[in-house]
Image 1 (tube, rainbow, N blue to C red):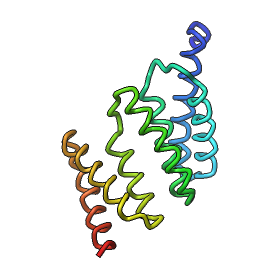
Image 2: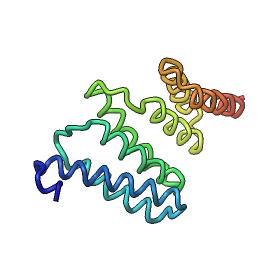
Image 3: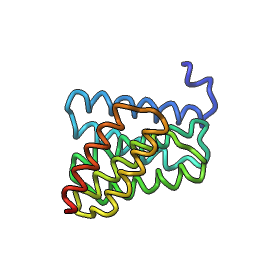
Length: 153
């Protein structure tokens, strides 16, 4: 009933956010197929909106979808989705989840054997995590960078 009182654009954004949350629940319950399907639906919906009131919704939805794709070994799709996030974030001057976005791209490039791009994106992730003082992600990214470097030798 509350959603009916909102403008249509906000209703769609609310539905996408709810689908995104549902996808996270499925993922936590280790129901990856349901999570992937739900994130895909949210991804398609968020891509259909020209102007978002909550610009972080695009980033969150795409990141969660890409995360599922990564664990489903759909690496080219991860790259495609995260490149959309990168372009969207630059266009909208948005740094939300920038470090995590770079990190998943780095890990995807590492997994596909492109160690040069993996290193570049991981260094960018480390820089962002450092600036944001995000110690947990910074430590993980530094370990991952060391693994990438050791594979480059």
